[in-house]
Image: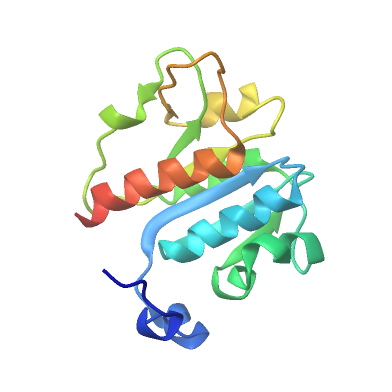
Length: 176
């Protein structure tokens, strides 16, 4: 077994990325404080050809040196938009027939491993503040909630880790 060199990985150019068919998945980051978390989510979105990221509330926007440190150029490939109010974005997406789910620990949440995706359906995921999570008002507007089952002593994961886990899971359910 030999480690592959970057030139062997057949990565897309920025132009190819822009033209590629996107995974019908939208990420909403609401009141995310950590610039490194934001950049990391951009990188995950790039890796799985995510359609769009909405940056809401106090979430910082590119260009930003600290976001760039972890995004490594993904802010140039992934389509993103800033909207002050996450509630407006949720309502807009629902009007467009997008299924909107909070990634949060709430009553009646569906564990990620049990979440079923419908073919030909677009999904949006709301990720909330590192301390307070997704706001109750946003949860009430969502079609439901997805929870990552955790078995240890901690009851939360870093936002960028949560995004990576959920995006990968939905991506593989949609594509494979």
